[in-house]
Amino acid sequence: MRLLFGSFFTFLLAAVIGLGATWFALSRGVAFGSLTIGAWTAWPKTGSQEIDPYAHASIARDGELPIGIGDGVAFYARADDAGDEFDGRCTFALSGMTPPARYWTLTLYNLRGGLVANTLERHGFTSEEIVRDLDGSFTITVAPQARPGNWLPTGGIEHFLLVWRLYDTPIGIAATTLKEGPMPAIARKGCS
Amino acid sequence: MIRWLLWLLGGIVLGGVVHLATVLAMPRAATKDAYSRLVPIAPVNTMVQLPAPAAQSSIMPFMDPAFATAVCRYDLSGGSIKLNAPVSEAYTSVTFYTRESVAYYAINDRAAGRRAIELDLMTPEQHAQLPEEEDVTAADRLIIDSPSTTGLIVLRALAPEPGLMPMARSALAAAQCRVEQVQ
Image 1 (cartoon, rainbow over the protein chains, first blue to last red):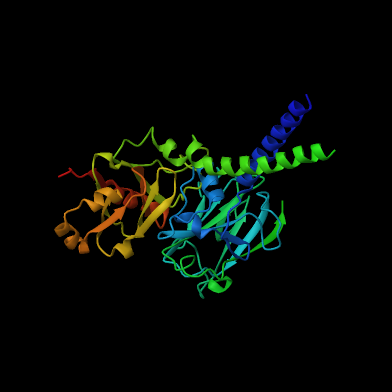
Image 2 (tube, chains in turn blue, orange):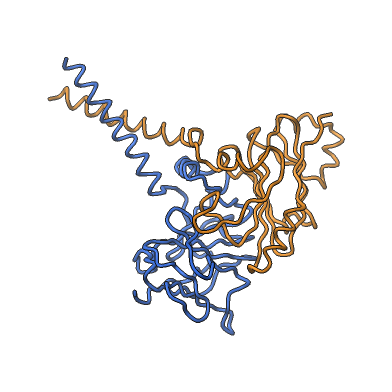
């Protein structure tokens, strides 16, 4: 009888710990070999055959096709430079320079990787369509209400994330050091 | 008391095994992975364009809306595949994925260095069976070995601004992927 209870307890514990850890790892998006610049983090190895088992399980579950390492690299941000999570009811300013790349795109997604509805049907910018200052720098305003200049609408959703994709870039292919390039700073400018 | 501690320890160790096994099995067990999502819209060994991602409707998560995308869901069991993709004016890339969504090779238009990206995709066995003469002339012929018999070729063409999307789409429309006859 004691054996029965004991093994039942063991198997139950194993199932709870094992499945719980898997669920936790996949919903948190655990992956190794990250490259962080400011508020932005990329996982260049996820786009190669050296993808780690956690990242592999995660993309298979979500149905994503990661950007290949010979194509480009994707930087994700879900919080500003101060560490405050993005809130679509607030205004954020992205400014500065980008690392060397032939083209880049910036896209706003909800947490499940879907685009967010807005009246302009604008979901992001490319390096070609951005309005720049005379010195080549730029500011993108991520806000729920229309702004002059480069306005990226949040649609007022509670949480969002930003993905900065660099195409045809040396970043991520060579040794991954923090000095590889500047990424735009993200500052919160108040909430409505 | 000691006995219960042993049961507890056994549960934790077994839990670790369950965790690792489920993580490693996930790519094979996933029913909504990219390949499965594309099965209904992409016939085998045919290049098809994907509808642009929009709010509330996109085939896969985290698609880049600035790109036109075309997919060839390949199956090499009937012979190798020849891919021919004219490059668009802005930026074009080809990425190869295994059946389990691992990006094993990617190349862009500039690295390909021509007006069109031309590639032969085959299994390592098919590559080994190539006549040697053909391998010599392979200098101007890029051969990619696929780690899996089935998988995805994804072609992406950038529209630097929304008005240029038709141009990107028409570049992709001319792309072809077809099975080469086995000699």
